Length: 357
Image: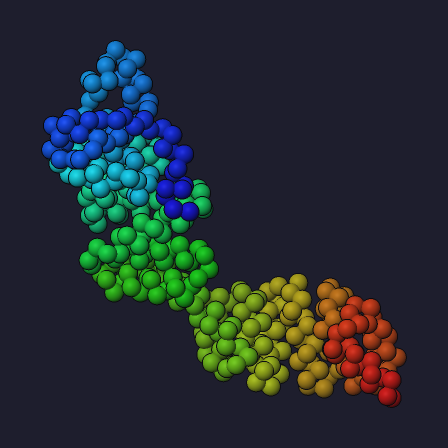
């Protein structure tokens, strides 16, 4: 959600006073055709009035704070451009709000600090202000994931600043969390190409993303280009040697290349890491069947079938029993398969084949 939605309830904290255009001209050196509603955070005005002050005695600082606050909440607010012009005409208005932001952060009121700072970014669109804005946004998003769209909106705004690398880094962090590793890698490379500082943390981030992208690309190539998949996956064993799924994917590539012995080797390596991966057990059965060792294949496939009751594994078992000459077990498992899914295409073909025997 955008900031004006995320912070919409904060407008309830604001009072809007109808101020005559003549008063605004004197205060803010601005010429208007109509009166304007001026914002003040309600707690400020209530405390001021309780202190004995009259409405006309309201300090200018209350209006400065209110304008920055409203702009930060809703960048499409009706008087946004007028407020920005007013604030630009007030000497030291930015220094005043920066001090207010510092106090909000010191008191751990990060959302209020963010709102004021976002308002400031419309008056003073500097890289330093956006760097602080990103830092606050990260702090809020870590605690509340719904803040992500708001952070992405300020990232997009910041990209127009020339030679400013930071927004690409922060977007890369978000994309990595979303599981969009390809985009995260592209954004991080953009950050580096724009002169972003390459700290040890950034170097590790880049290295990690490079490996993850290679892993994802390798998995995506398994069936259409198993050789290409192996070129991406095998080098990852140096760093991810305890990842059973990595060994499994390498084994699948070798099986597709009909190198069943190597596939079995990597599957056994996967089992030594995690012996509960059913897909590894099933894959072992497929590879042994491909080598003609149906007895061993049946042993693995039965184990996988007992764990999953998968129709696909059941039909593989039937074929292994048939090839091993155990017609009784083949028929028995066909009946099991029909109970699981009588409309399965392979089950129907096998049923017809048995009828024709």
